[in-house]
Structure formats: C-alpha cells, structure tokens
Length: 278
Image 1: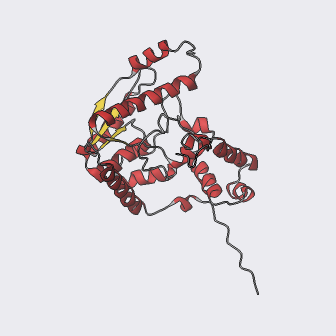
Image 2 (image 1 turned 180 degrees about the horizontal axis):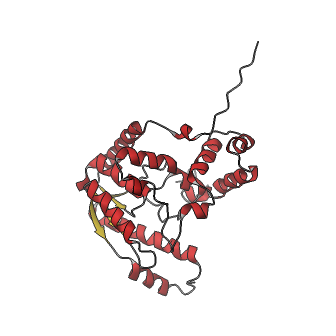
Image 3 (image 1 turned 30 degrees about the vertical axis):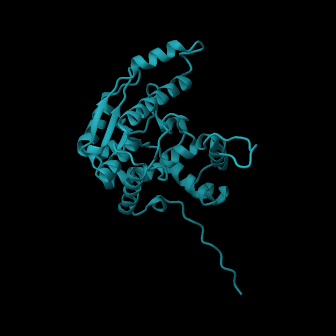
C-alpha cells in the first residue's frame, strides 16, 4: 500500500487570490448585520486618511449601508499633514457619496504633550501613539454623540505583525478587512473601483514625517504576505525559506514578532479568582 504524501503549497502570489466579488458580498453583509444588531441609528463613523485600508473600508461601508449613513473624519495635524492624502480621502468620499468632516488635531495634541510631565519630544514612537489614540478618542466621541458604530481599517498583515497602536488605530467596534492580507486589500480595492494611484500608494501610519510601513517592517508586503500565509498553514519554515529564497532566520524573526505581539491582539486578561471570570 502506497502512502499518499501532501503536495507542498507553492508560495506564489496566486495563493492569495480569492473571489473578491464574493469577499465584497460577505463583508458588506457582515457590516449590515452588525449595525442592524447593534440597533445603532446613526450608521458608521470612521477615520479616512487617504490610504488604501481606510479607503477600502469606507467603500465597503458605503456599499453596505449607503453613503448617507457613513461619516468619515479627516484628522490631519501639522507635523505630518499631507495635502495629497487629504485630497485622496476627499476623492474616495465623493466617489462613494460619504459625508466628511475635517478636524485639525494639532492644538489638541500640543495640549496633551504640554500636560505630560515626562513628555519627550524625541521619543517619536510614544508621541506617535498619542496621535493614533487621539484620533480614536475623537471617533468614539462622534460615535457616542451621534449613535454610530466605529469602524476600523486594520488589515491582517499589520495586525499579525503588531504594526499598529494598541487602543489607537486598532480600537474599533468592527474591523471588516482584518482577515485580508495587505496585498488582498489592494486587489479588493481594485474590485471596488478605487483609483489605482490610491490603491498602490505607499502605506504609512502618518505618525511622524516620512514614515512608511514597508521601511519599518523591513520587508515588502508581497513577500511578507506569502510568509504569513505559509506560517498560518503551518508550512515548515525551512520550506518557506526555500520557496521564497529568503534566509530562514528572517522568517523565524517574523514568527517571533507575531508571538511577541499577541498581547496587542487580545483584550486585557485577568486572574481567575471566582467561579467564572468575566
């Protein structure tokens, strides 16, 4: 009797191809059902940066609920303000009939910086995280005031890598594209009719000047997504390294980063002292 062996998955860009029309349908249905079940009368509020993730999320929300039920907040600040990003955000809003409001958060940030006794201007990570959390504070104010649901735009690649601000851009009531890798988000964006210049522009959290995601991650999304795909399916690291012609220790470092950042993907935990924990 011959023992059948599994054919190794070929880690080529095609493995990330899915039926993006079906994906669009599944996500828009999810948004509809969540908002309906929440009994929210105001629809959705989200941050619109001009980047591909928030643009795709905004488009999906508009298709699910209609643009009149979506409010997009544009929240620039002096240090990282980019007129091209603001213009792109407005382009998306116009294309999908979404209402917008622009809120310059510069003065709010300055007041926070000046309030913190140990504030360090040179610590750009801590400073940048304040920006992300300030934006989320404003989004939740609008949600509370207008009876809306906060919709986030985190993708799977950055979520796995821990490349986000905890309780900042990761904080939301729903995150419709979180199970899509970055390269899949780009393809879904194309399926939604989002202009190519916006879909392909370099990703940035815009927390400090000249910040780009791929530079900080140290790898292109096209390669990262295939590594993450392989790890998700328990393909041996040696096999992933061989197929992608990458050093094994680079893949091991990515796996360690995923595990190290698990705490950022979980709600706060507690010690079990009673009959049941909350």
